[in-house]
Image 1 (cartoon, one colour):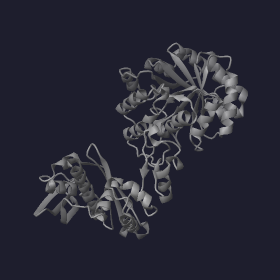
Image 2 (cartoon, rainbow, N blue to C red):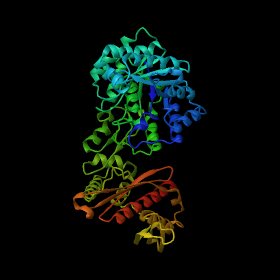
Image 3 (cartoon, rainbow, N blue to C red):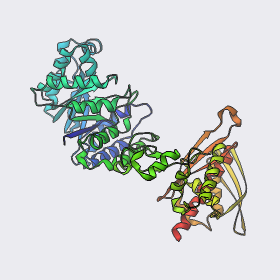
Image 4 (spheres, rainbow, N blue to C red):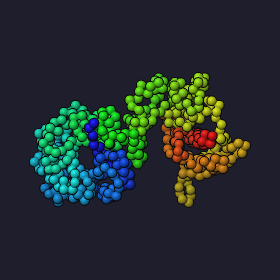
Length: 526
C-alpha cells in the first residue's frame, strides 16, 4: 500500500475564495484540527502579505501539531536581487517553519510577459530561491502553470523543475493553476515530469484547481501516474471555482483506490473535519458534497428506500459511517410506505398499513401547501403523533399579536413587541415581551408564559432561521416557508411553518420547536 502525503492549503489558497475570511484564531483552530488527523503539511499563509499571517507563524509554534509540518508560502526572489536580500525570502526565513513552499513560473509566456525576465533569469530565480530556503529547512517548489507551460514549451518547463530539484527542493508540485487541463493530459504530463527529474532526490506532488470540475479526478490521475503528495483545501474552497477538495481526494484514495492516507485510520473523521471548517469559516454546508454532505446518503424516492431496507449497497457506494456520515431517509410526496416505515420505527406503527397511508396522505397534502419535511424532522415527528392520536399538546395557543419596526425614541433602535395568550391545562397565561425582531419577541414571550411549568426550555436555543418564498409568481402575496433549527445541547431538530404571512409561518415553526423539545423531555423522563 503506497502512502500518499496530504498538503492542506485551506489557510492560504482557501481564503482566496470569494466570501471566505478566517481570523487568526480561526486559522489556529483549523491548523490544530488538521494536525489531529495527521495531515502531513499545513500551509499557513504568506508572511510578507499581512500581519495576521506573521502572527499565525509566531503563535502556531506554541501548538502541539504532532507529525504535521507547518509551511510558510512565498514566491521566487525578485529579479536583479540576491535571495538573501529579497524581502520575500527574508520573510519566509523569519517564519521559522520546518518547511518553506515557494512558487515559480514554469511557463515561458508567464516568465517573459508577466515577470518581464529572460528565460535564463527565471531559471536562476528558481534555483537561487530553492538554495536559500534549503538553509532554513525542507523546500517544496510549486511549479505554477506547469501543465500550460509544458504544453507550450516542454523543454523549458522541464528546465524549471530541474532548476528547483538541483538546488535542493525535496518536492516538486505540478500545478494546474488555471484548472483547464483534462485527465488524460494530466497523466501524460505527470509521467513526463517524473522522468525529467529522475536523476534528482525529489518527489512529485499535484495541485489542481477546479475550473472544469475535474480537480479531484485530475488529482487521482496524477497519483496513478506517480505523484506522492496531494494538495488541496478542505471542502474545495478557493479562488474562482475552488481547489481540489481534499475531503473527496482522501476518501477516494484510501477507500476506493487502496492508498494509505493520514496513516490509514482517519477516514471516519472526514465529516467532522468538513463541518468544522464550514462552521469556523461561517459558511453554509454544501448538502450535496460527496462523502460528507448531509444529502450524500439521503434517500427520498420510495423505490430507493425500499431497496435500501433490503441491502444498503443498492443505492450507497460505501458505508456512511466509514467517513463519519449517516444515512438519512427523507419524506415527501415522492415517498412510499418504506420511507414512512423507516422514519417512524421508534413509534412501532410499521404494522399499521392504514396509519402509514394516513401519514403519507397528510405529508402529500401539506407539501401541496408548501411544506417540506426533509429538514423538519421535529415537525414530522409531531405530525406522526397527530395522525396516530398520540399527540398531547403541552400548551394551547389562544392568540398572539406582534408589532415590528417600532423605534425607541431614546436609543433610536428598532425593536419588536409580542403579546401572547395561551393556556396550560386550566390556566390561561398572558405575557408580553420585546425583542430584536418579531421572532425574538415571540420566542421571549412564549418562554415567559411557559417557564414556570417547563423550566427545561432554558436548555433550548435557536441555531438557524431560514425563509423561502414558495410560489414566487404571487409576488408579495406568496406563501412563505420558515424553517427553524433548534438544539438543547444534546439533540438537534428542525421545524417548519408555512403561511402567506411571514410572522404566522414563523409562529407555527416556533410552536412546533417548543413542543418537540417538551416531547423529548417527556420521553427522557419515562
